[in-house]
Image (cartoon, rainbow, N blue to C red; front, side, top):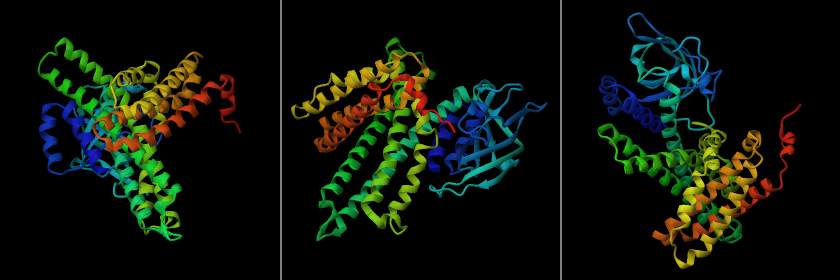
Length: 432
């Protein structure tokens, strides 16, 4: 957990800080000093536009920070990237800038270390800034709308990777236990009910990993073009490809974070289920896996916020365009039936998107957004696994299990959307 925060913060300094700041801080990070991103506050939470920690500029041009940050992962770190309000009289994201705070300069107290359910090796802190000296990163007013958004996308990809790792651990623990545990004279893995759980855990794990790898590739490609553009002007075709990968990276990052973290939680749940009563005890690793998994669908943007980021790629056709490209690829004869199933799921997705957007009501779209994003996710992951299977036939069983699972989930969402009347939304609004 601490390493993910370190990498994201270091990349932000490398990309946006001036040369003097890079020379000052990057060697310290390489030498082992820790970093954190100080974004959220007690009264703002995920609404980063409402951040009110104040950045004041002194007569000599230097900056000091005053206010409180809360739920700061690795909050006792050596170097902090801090989102603060630098523009007097503003209340939105355009008044926020990014700053570097060095712990050695003083001015910040750790008021509280949170007592958490999981990831206990990473201190989550409440910090009080009192005239803390800081350095402006990049340009004023771009703290949220440019720098934090870049930082968050990197962090979300990191959480997707963390989720895959936890899923892998959960699956291995469950598999090992199912092989060793004897009931009624045989190992429990021989019981169909247990074997099915393990098969689905493996399918979700393989699907999560292939989505993570695809997203990572899109991010790598657009960052490569960004680096090239800093050295020379991109050719016309290069600009076109850079835009293509940037769009895919923007679309796949929330999808990867959302889907892998939810599957991670499901695999942690099933790991305990296979262990039975033993899984509820602290004697086995699955108890810690379960606690550590829970944060993945919450921090760096909850699953609900990933849906907010992803839904525009549903309505603008980013996911569908990519799916159609995958559908044109040739597959082995034994995989034609799976491909046909994915094509059928795609048509259900198209019909569902048209049904929702056809109502032309933002509230209705918001209400149905998670269902549409998940439908896209199941189809995208299915096609990625189909592509993996063409290179390595050992994925074929997981492919079949996952597509069967995804087919049922897509059908469920399609049925809900197809039979839902917009006026029924009032039934879902909270009332006393």
